Image (cartoon, rainbow, N blue to C red):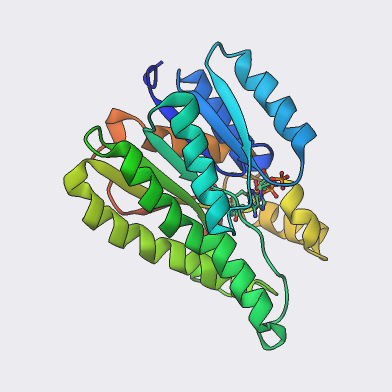
Amino acid sequence: MYLKGKVALVTGGSRGIGRAIALRLAEKGADVMINFFTNRTKAQETVEEIRKKGVRVESVRGNVGNPEHIQKIFNTVREKFGQLDIFISNAATGVLKPILDIDLKDWQRTLDINARTLLLGAQEAVKLMEGRGGRIISLTSMGSTRWVPKYGVVGVSKAAIETLTRYLAVELAPKKIIVNAVSAGIVDTDSLRAFPDRDLMLERTKSHTPMGRIGVPEDIAKIVVLLCSEDASWICGQTIIADGGYSLLA
Ligand SMILES: NC(=O)c1ccc[n+]([C@@H]2O[C@H](COP(=O)([O-])OP(=O)(O)OC[C@H]3O[C@@H](n4cnc5c(N)ncnc54)[C@H](OP(=O)(O)O)[C@@H]3O)[C@@H](O)[C@H]2O)c1
């Protein structure tokens, strides 16, 4: 229960990896605010699961691609909990197209939702963490450094997250706010349904993963929550790869 007394906000905390992170944070004693955007039923189900862990939990609807909604999300954290210790920037979306088909709208939407959220979210989080310290952790992927079919604009947004992580880490360290990112290998969540070659991708990933299986959301949640612990307090500005060794062979 090393997170007892802490308050965490998880964007996109209703489903997939974000849900697993929110549950794990609660298992370690943190009170949790989950953000969702379109699926209120899923969010409510996750709230109920978190509540069973014996912590305080709230949910807030908001599109992280909209700066006013980001403001509202943080205002709600302030109203409901009065503090923030952990900000997990997890929600993401993506336009899956070859790079030459990316138009201005695709670029703007993907960069805004995936990368700008870390910038605006961190600026809001600092106001609530000032004087008490905290953790900011983002989710990224290996598409930031490698070519993945139709992943170009999402890969660019993830590269922006990783670079922003390093800048935030240096500039927020004097405030005792530690910033890192976790780069997940393939994890079988709803987001993979958008990939036309999902089954092939899963098969190939499994056969190229030294650990011999596909990642599950809990694999990633464990690393993220470990980064929130005191034991991880000397890790600053890093992108930690959690992929069962896939990137060693791919
Ligand atoms: N799955 C993978 O293989 C993988 C690999 C590497 C990195 N990642 C990263 O891990 C993170 C989570 O991925 P996932 O696979 O768990 O995704 P997911 O299952 O598709 O879940 C996405 C979550 O984000 C929320 N969301 C989506 N757009 C939003 C918006 N504009 N504003 C607020 N919330 C929004 C969704 O809420 P609603 O349902 O309410 O809309 C949902 O809770 C992402 O950053 C992703 O890039 C995933």
